[in-house]
Image (tube, rainbow, N blue to C red):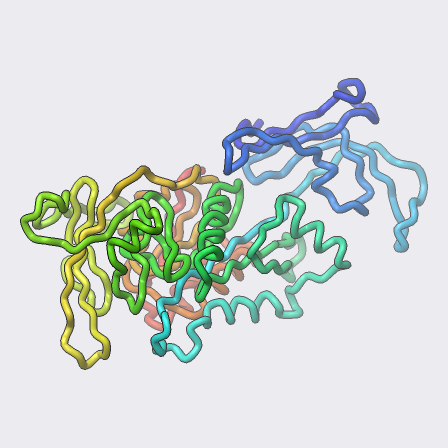
Length: 408
């Protein structure tokens, strides 16, 4: 029996325990928001025209498959009952759900080098609307499938189904924060926390990783894992005053060598990150990016090598990012998480010891990566197969994508 965060059983409040019409097959799930268990009747999670009235739920496994008994009423093509109800056993297979988040592109009014800065989202949308996999049904059923477990406000929703026999129906929620305003970004940040805490979820974030300071959901809002973002405006850091106004977990301020207020060692303390076997802090500045020089107990020392144009001389700036509150990383219950951004192996694998964690080992950026990840889920591929496909599609083709499978 799977005990947490999902438990199944029978509510006999309106009948007698056993095979009785007053019994209701029930699931209790732990809420990602409150940590409390919430009860739901399984019949309410089925399509209204399924023909099933479930009375007894026996067990649920780690993949969310539920063994149950109940009455089944056959129907004809017009939905009319045919024959007598039959007592039957069944297996309830969960619908897979993918949550795809697209963070700030960093363009902020600057002409991007890519003529289509939304390319990753565009390619995914083209794939989700491919007639060979796009799932269509009557609007009432689609509305039910979209909202039976919550409103998912702010997200676009598509349904897809692979072409092979036995393929699962998959919901794909996409959150577009590429140019989002502050409230939209904040809502997506909360949605991502809940997605990471949803049992069996497939989650991906495509955007800026901010050198371990948290994903950027818009140019002004960030968060996750207690390592909140540096907002990127032309990839330059915003001021300490702005960070404090936004109530981030970190404040940003100029780095002053020798100032004990930096809470940081002058040279920084480096170490090798387990699994990826890379130094936590890269050894040389990265042109055009904020670069971690070192860290103390509560701070990061960044160096920014900024050029307005590639031919310009770099403008070197020093920053310290100082931790001021506790981590907001949620309880992790996802099945797969692809942190699709630069250097997410060295920067984040220490925080995401759960499920299949997909990461990058250097600078990363491919306009097909999200589509490739979702396509692997649709086609029932293994994590290893998906990582191989990501590397095959990447223009650099230098094996920058990898996956590590932690125990659930």
